[in-house]
Image 1 (tube, rainbow, N blue to C red):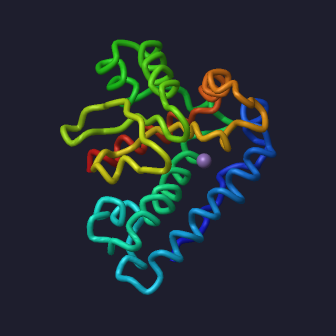
Image 2 (image 1 turned 90 degrees about the vertical axis):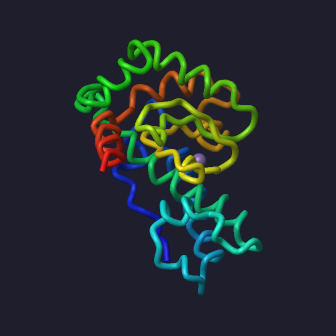
Length: 203
Ligand code: MN
């Protein structure tokens, strides 16, 4: 059965960019509900002991009556697991560097251009969803969006950076100001972790 993973920092650690109350509800209520409902859906099935990434990559093997619940809650669990880890209060010590920096510059021309394209992509999401930097099947980087809690893993795309643009991720502090939330979010990015995620996709 799945468990709510530990949050790698305290609720107020990402202040002032992401406020403590949002973190508390987002992690403690929203993410917890995804974990609970995922467990409910796979209880007593062969998927109970699989890793979440494996489950999502094999989503078509899930019985029809449970499939949508696993897409929603399994995706919700995997997406948030990644989201907490790619943020840090020590962003200044985990700067844009290494192989991932080289690859981003190669693909998008510059960091500024990558940030611009990622932001534009995220702003286009109508309603709830995620913006992602993923590694595609050819090993290349791509910016994509997904709706609701759909995980890129379902399409065999490997997410290494993700931005939650559900209103629950920012509404308490930013209300309808999604662009301001997105702009501030760049101040808490853990590039060291993204580099690690990137290297894992090469194995
Ligand atoms: Mn969320």
